[in-house]
Length: 174
Image 1 (cartoon, rainbow, N blue to C red):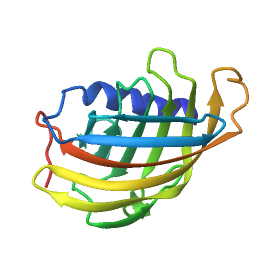
Image 2 (cartoon, rainbow, N blue to C red):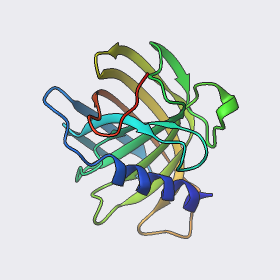
Image 3 (cartoon, one colour):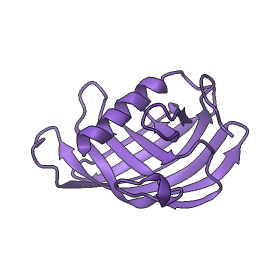
Image 4 (tube, rainbow, N blue to C red):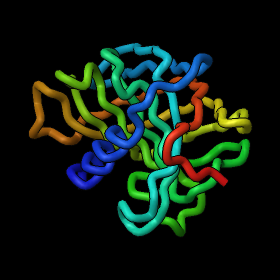
């Protein structure tokens, strides 16, 4: 299961590597198995086409290149979510409505401190429009740390805020 999700995260990270214009930013903090804070301007979203796994997927990437950590939030569909609060599910399917899937990589991408998959929590979208999306989140995630990769029962809680910009290349937002 973790391998399948991490493959999607890698594909998304490769897809969303173009820097966004000014105004985009994020902050996050984690407690539990890994305690850290991170912030930066690397906050963007876009659509991964249905050719990846049969359905289009909205992907919101926060800190993909951050030395402090990164969050990947994904949701089935090719439209921006409406303002509101959405659940985090461990393995959402298109029939789950607009639930989000969440992955958290603690530390820098070259030497991560741990990798965690969201099990519960929420994403609140507070603003949407004109190629911009803002909101906040709280994610309860399970995974492993670099020191104990065999123990996938370690927990973190990640909280944060973001203002993301739409990808300019290859995005088909409706």
